[in-house]
Image (tube, rainbow, N blue to C red; front, side, top):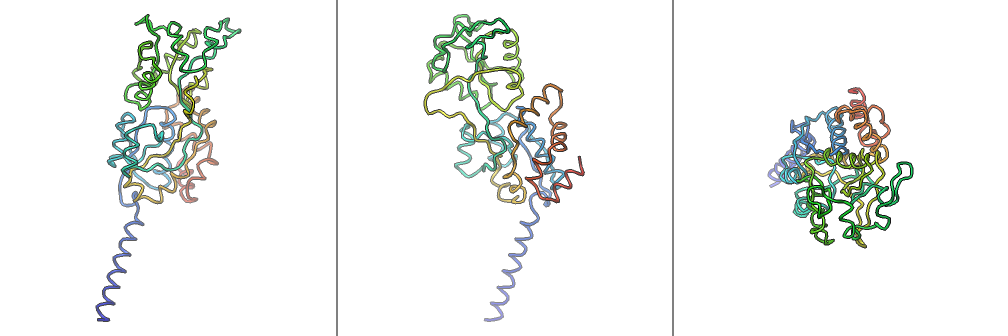
Length: 321
């Protein structure tokens, strides 16, 4: 009996050691690729590219990215077709909410703190602009609820009987939410729900109207390069609505469970919002592609990202730059 017991103990020990060795090998050491969502707005692009360099150069991971809109990528995350969604606006997407409730995805860290979204108009619409000789055309406009009186001010050239609301591009989570808001505020019959084809098309529409001093009503958010270029006022919403965004690094359940060393890094990731806005403005102004700007950021701001990683990983990333 003692011999059998000793043998069983030995086998259990070997099994536990093997299991430990397997876990210690980690996600990247075992040759698995880390796939990122290739997101198509500037802050997410930069954050994704920064994290790709850190995991590639600092931790020896094979990294890749899969393009697609938010909803497609959240579905891919829930099925572990991708492992990291670098800028997940938690709670806004039904796809994310259902996947999180089912334990298929996990949000970690606080990569961006202070992000906000809403419906905006240029400040000169409400206050005027003496330097540009622009009169205030809607001095009483304060809230989304007030927009019912101002459809003529934001006239849609294609449907002159209605105003035009510039929504998000189709396929973005915010597009669905804004469409519901048009209904809930009773504005669906007064405003066309105009969806630009892309994020840059939305930017171009806002900038074009702004430069001409014309009224425009649009959804927008921060952090973004555009908010550094134009002076916009966010319209108030119904009492109790909070549009401050809780942003996490979204992970697939499998990656969260099997890559503890990397999860520990992602839990610490944070890009200070003022610094982020400065870099996003630089991306646009100097026309720097996101992968290149990510390397410039890592080189210029070790005080930020050295806090996320091990000393060994920091040396490896620094050497690669």
